[in-house]
Image (cartoon, rainbow, N blue to C red; front, side):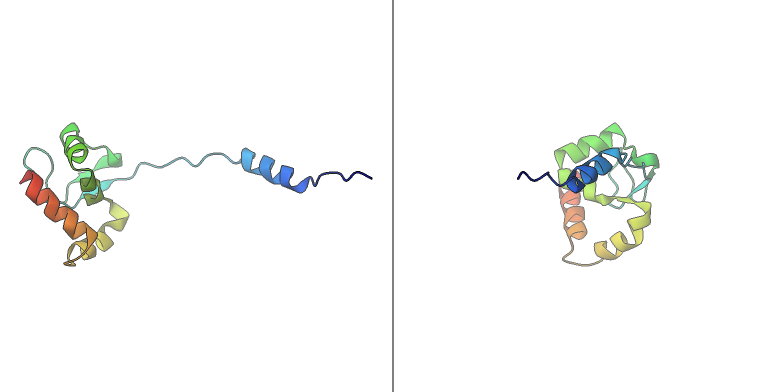
Length: 101
């Protein structure tokens, strides 16, 4: 006797295929790094996360700098982290100071 394959997994796959991909919503970003003349001032908000070319060039030169562009909803937690001596954001802030200031 032959057994028929279980059809439940096929239904699960087709159900997943029907789900529409999640669209990422553009969010406003606040720059929490040090002021870099001609690039960005501390606490500048970038509408819809669109960074100017000069800011993007700095990120290309020092990729960790991207961590200092924080969604507005995460700003309070990020500021708390910046105030901790051994935090990641504090280290990135220091590296940006050394590189661009």
